[in-house]
Length: 321
Image (tube, rainbow, N blue to C red; front, side, top):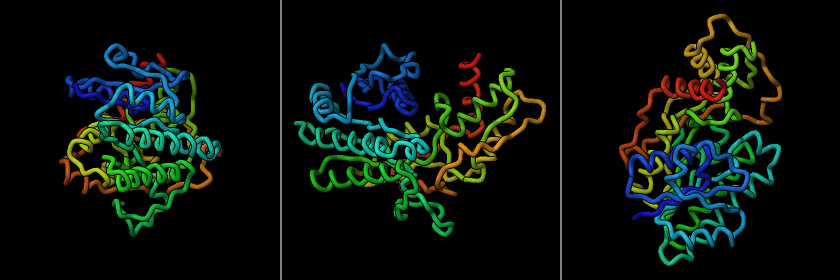
């Protein structure tokens, strides 16, 4: 039986990837890394179908012990400090977590008798400051990260390339653009909006606090993203990097309006600009091209945007009822 290790399995993407694997690949045995303080509710319904292992991926010995005991065929490395605003408040922690954990996984993997295929979940935040003339963004676009998080993902990305070139380790890299859906924490804009709208629906608050509504992002449903991750390790070339995105730019204000239109709010609501939600520097526009990935795998987003937003609202309705 094929063994798959998902780092950060209790997280937003990790839990969806585990579910997708269970549903689509019953022949796969799933292992997932957790930490002592990991919140387990995301995998509550599948906890008896996967094997979780507590680990500190920033510690090489711990990482080596886990990989040598499991001997995974495939590693999906998703564990990270992934909240961009937090990377300004804790830049050292962000760099340490995202870079060192990746380095330990790569270094430990190259010593195993059987080299696992390794998928690195990199990010569109690596592109950073993008000129309008460069849209849509391809994999050849310059990397100009505008946050410590973006810098950490560039380092992760380049480590994967270096280990492929130096040791022929089968590393697969994707640069996923923004993704959302049920289980997204309220630290992230789409889920934060959805939570606030549901709080208004049930009478807990009256207005919505927002940050910059003018930025434009390329959103994909998380369930389409995890399908792409599997296609990457199955059909793509190791050592290469692939954008994964919808190719549709959505202004954050339009995302908010879309959620409100699907809600039970009948009367006009107040929108309050919260300066605390403004970033020191913000990427104004990110719209990607996934043509390279689509040509290689046939992948395209399948879940309609309205379903993504509706499922996100229903997620918070269930949690807040």
